[in-house]
Length: 127
Image 1: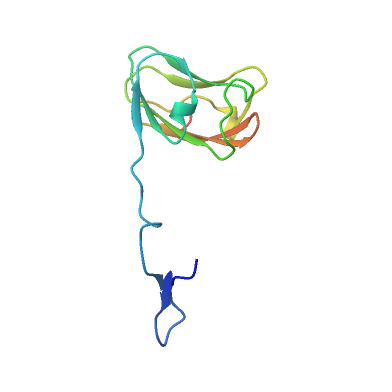
Image 2: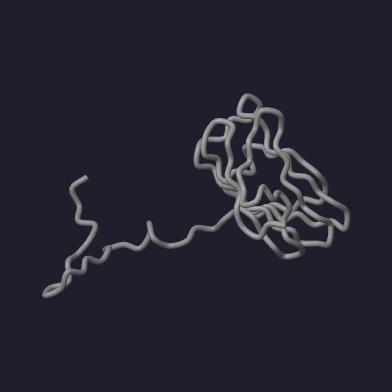
């Protein structure tokens, strides 16, 4: 570990990184889906584009079925007119403002974040 990772700017209280590699946005995998599905480990960290004229249900599985690491994030976007609803499998709790679980229309997005074994937060454009 011994290399310098930041440089102080003389005469100021500022320190700047010598490399921006850890500060630059990374490419995020995008997956398109057109029917109801249960989240899988392959969805972790992805943006899921849910596009159908029919309703789509995204089910969050229990930890015993799919053990996502705590802190896992999944972003879900509704790309067509079919309502996208997030559902909890048995034993799973999804916490959201006003207990809303549907994406708020075409081109709106929400993000799920795993907080505990069977507890997820859902925030974003909810209806």
